[in-house]
Length: 83
Image (cartoon, one colour):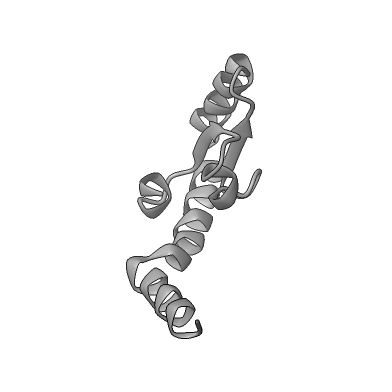
């Protein structure tokens, strides 16, 4: 989340949390937990492509706004008040 808020692309493993936030090919790359070579390749792609890095970073800044503390508090308040 911090990387996304900072406008960075994400290279991460496919685990709960990252799969909920990162949109593959739009905000970064997700790999299996043992796919070390693929992760290194994705990092290399981002290092070599300024445009892709910037596009993914900008996409992430937009997406992560849905998870700001204010938005989450509003969602939780609505949830608790509906019960």
